Length: 429
Image 1: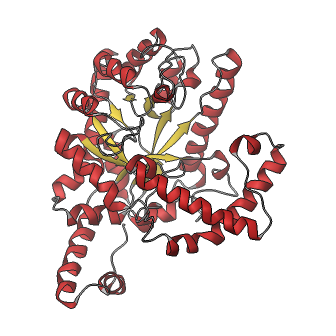
Image 2: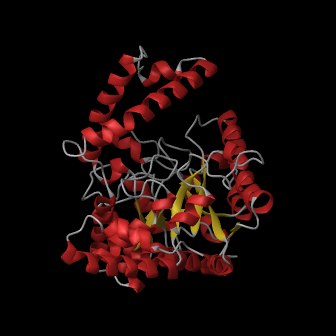
Image 3: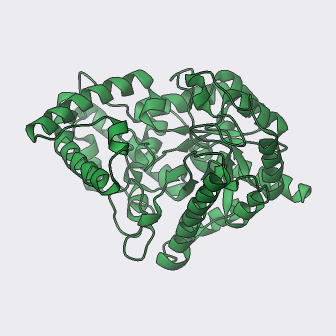
């Protein structure tokens, strides 16, 4: 069961309101809590590290990661799509082999969590019926998405293999052009490898349609996305992207893409990653925060190095450097929060829900969903880990969304697309 709002929590949440508004605020929070408890909440993008899926260290414990089972329980997050992510590497047999091994390690980690580590707490879902059955049983739900199809190499049969391993969505590129598709990162220098999709990428879409994998257009280039939508026989998704009209970042979707996704019957999962929610606000906050961290580092005689210098370090030295920097940042965090609250406020839940509002206005209520990108750079003030998930529902209620609309945004739309994709797959098979 999801967490029930206690009287003490209500008092804490309303204590700062004028007396005349306290009763209304309490009623609004109670309304939002009931909706949150009644519906299935689904986050389509939670990154993982296989090192956190061992018998000794795993998500059944309250690790310092943004997503764990206790944090999901606390915040009322029912479904987490755990991500089989592979960074873009060389387009060589050796590169493909390393990528494939990385992907299999992450697939195995997710299965280990649901079958060996905590089968009494979380179960893997492959269909929308699974999601509803597992949620009704009181367990949390795991699903699997593949971020970057680079690990399939040139073996198109691996698309079916990944489907058999539980993958239910897959993107054809990440940050860097893959053998399958151009990446959004080509906008930096205007250099493209395929001018959209490669021939192998087109085959991958055909295979994804055939085996019931949703095609994810969050990372590829605009041209690749347009070609993918045109080619796909099933609706597509953007697993973690927001509106480019609000935040002009290449990872966000332009109005032209939104219109195509709507016509295709797909869904856009707005992402709570600060730089994609507000480019300017995020950059200003990051610059000011870095200056404060540097102050703390200088007091301890610790030099903050540029990224290339850190990467060039021997692995042991790099780990030690990272640990020390993390300690310094932790010390600086309360000072950053206090000093920058007015001069450089953080990107927050309201900023994030502005994207949801925009997407709903442009595409309609049936084509919008939610993603955190936790443990992959995501999180905003107010939804910085899974334990704060209720704050999204509260903001949606505050803006006048109904229970039916919120249920669609929190997962109903995504599951509808999954159903349609799997229906197409059965016909193609």
